Amino acid sequence: MSKRLNRPLPLGTPAGVEVLTKILTQGPIPRVQIARRTGLSQAAVTKAVAPLIEAGFVTDQQALAEDAAEGRPELGIGRPVSPLTVVADSVSVIGLKVTPTDLIGVTTDFKAGILAVRHQQLTDLSAATVIEQLASLATELMDTLDDEADPSGPLIGIGVAVSGDVDTLHGVVRDSPFMGWRDVPVATPLGEKLRVPVVVSNDVRALTVTEHWFGVGVDADSFAVVTIGSGVGCGLYVNGEVVSGAHGVSGELGHLPLAPGDLVCTCGRRGCVETVASSDAILARVRETTGQPELDLSGAIELARAGDAHAREAFDRAGEVIGSALAAMVNLVGPELVVIAGEGVADYDLYDQRMRQAFAKHAFGAAGDCTLMLRSHTFDDWARGAAATVIRSYVRGEPPLQR
Image (tube, rainbow, N blue to C red; front, side):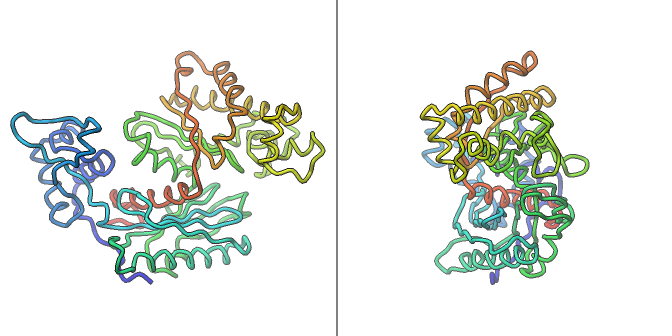
């Protein structure tokens, strides 16, 4: 069990939080640039940064050569500029992703860079068993942080990402059809076992936080992350924040009623996008129409690429429904970018053309200018998302990491 738990941030004002957030997400960055982007005076920036430098969370060392090569702005004439950057190993975080078959865990640094990865197969899906295995996996990862040869900083918290309706404030999974859970407390029992603050989040929203702080969202005014796998999820970033929803539910793209009404979803309702567009739904359709019940997803993809009409129909149908759902979301929210992600999404070029055609057909006016970007993710990325939610809560002083 890790000996090094928590490390308070010297942030006493909202200005300090804003300055550290800019350094963390956009650094290395000079003080004058922080002032321009936040509207704070340079004196206020210097005042906010001083205790962070003294405590070892931030450094003002000269920019590295590769940063200069990437064209970072030169500010100031006739005097050297010392950009501010976060000290990555000043703290460490653990992120855990729960799936119906496995647990995936990572340790990361303060910049959400992955340090170590561990996977563990689930023995069953009962909440008690999963929480016990989460504790075991977290302990294994904590032991890697205690390695004397590892430069990792003190552990500040553990993030857990679960699919479904999650009450992050209370650390409760209210409804997860894939896990078969309803009203399951996770943060409290896991935190009591490990004596570490635990943040529980919806998995897609956690992935969106990662993109907001450490990915495509750093420079975007608004974006959406749509995930396609066993389910179809959506995370939204608008008006400077990842959308949580008044009741903790938002962006449930997979449950828009855009599919045939005779198809029953895992949530128990009919006609959800997931009944046609999820990888499980595509595979079920190909098995049914080809009469090959033993077929796996890679086999279905091979059939479609070989020109099998039944397999092609399943992917075309999925692309049509996903494209329509994307258009509905973009018409309502208006993001400038949609990242379409998933463990095997790069293989789904099979429905890419049909998806884009359906999107163009239903997107209203300038909403059709929204960029659609396909990008593959691994389960390690989902676990990293869970860690990113801890980093965000730590910087902002949110429960259970409030200062």
